[in-house]
Image 1 (cartoon, helix red, strand yellow):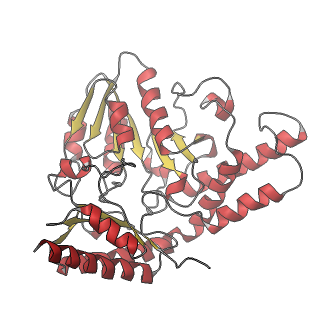
Image 2 (spheres, rainbow, N blue to C red; image 1 turned 90 degrees about the vertical axis):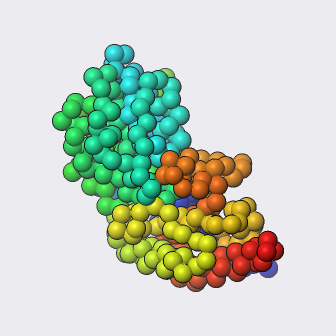
Amino acid sequence: MDEPRRAYLDHASTSPLLPAARTALMEWLDAPGVAGDPGRIHHDGMRTRVALEDAREQVAAWLGCRPREVVFTSGATESIAAASHGARARDPERTHVVLAAVEHSAVRQWAERGPHTVIGVDRTGRVDPDALLAAVRPDTALVHLQWGNHEVGTLQPVHRVVEACRERGVLVHVDAAQAAGRVPLHLGDLGADLVSVSGHKFGAPPGTGALIVRRGLRIPPLLVGGDQERARRAGLEDVLGIIGLGAAAAELAETAASWTAQARRQTDRIRSWAETADGVEVLGAGPDGSLSHLVCLGLSGVEPQPVLLGLDALGVSVHSGSSCSSEALEPSPVLAAMGVDADRSLRASVGWSTTDDDVDRFVDGTGSVLAGLRALGS
C-alpha cells in the first residue's frame, strides 16, 4: 500500500531530485560500455570526459560564467572550504577575513581558524555594506558575503560589496547555496572572485556542487594529490553526480523563472497567514528583500520541538533551530545575531515539487498544532 503524500516544505535543507537530473542519471547508467576515468585517453575515458565537460558547460551557461571557471566539488561546504583555504594560503602576509554574523557555519568556522572580523546585522539579518567594507585591512585576504540567508532568506548587497572589494584589491567570496535556482545569478556580470553553490539545494544529486573561480585567479587547492579539475581539486570526479548536476542546471535555465514566481506566491500565502495568526511573526526582510522560497516564523509562547512533531504527525515536514544542526534543535546563531528569539522559530521552504495544497496543509496544520499546544499550557 502506498504511503500518503507528505507536504515536504524543507527545500532549503535539501530538494528532491529534479526529473531531468533523474533521467540523465538513468540514461548514463543504462548506456552500453564502461564508464572510464575522464583523465585517460582511451575510448572509455574520452567518452566520460565528454560527458563531464558537457555538464560543465550546462552549469556555466546556467550560472552565467565561463566553463573553465567551474570547479566541480562535493557541495557548498567543500567549495567554501576551498575558497577559505585558498584565499589565505595564497599570501601568508594576508590572512585576515571579514564576514557577516549571519554567514553559514561552514564560513564561520573556517574564518575562526585565523584572524577575522565579524560584522553585525540589523533585525532583518541584513549587513551594512559600509560596515563590512570598513573592516577590510591591508592584511585582509577575503571578504565573505552570502547572497541570501539560509534561515530567514534576507538578501545581501552582494553587487555593491563585490564592486568595492575589487576596487580595494581584496578577494570576495559569495555563498550562493540558497540563491542558486531562486535568483538570476549572472556571475560574469557580478564579477565575484569566488562563488560556491550546492547541487542538492536545487534538485541535483546530493554530493555535487561547484566553486566558481574567476578567470585569472589562482588559489592553492584544498585537495591535493592529482591534476583533476585543471589541478584545482584533486580526486576522480563524481561523474555520475556531475551529469545529474548538469542536467538539473539545464532544466533550471528553462524553468527557474516560473518556479520562482510560484515559490513567491506560495510563501506570500504563508506570510499572509502569519500576519493574522496569534503569537506568530515573520522574521527577516519583507518579500522584496528576501529569497522567494523560504519563510522563517517566530513563535511566541511555545517550544518548536512539539510544533515540529505535531506537523510531522500531520504529514508536514519543516525545520526549526540552527540550520547547521542535524542531531538536535540548537538555538540559531543567525537569529541571535539579528537580536530576536533564537530558540523559537519555524522555517518553511518550498521548491519545484511543492503544490498549493502542501502550503495549505502547512498553514492549517500549524494553526491547529499551535492552538492545541497553547490550550494545554493554559
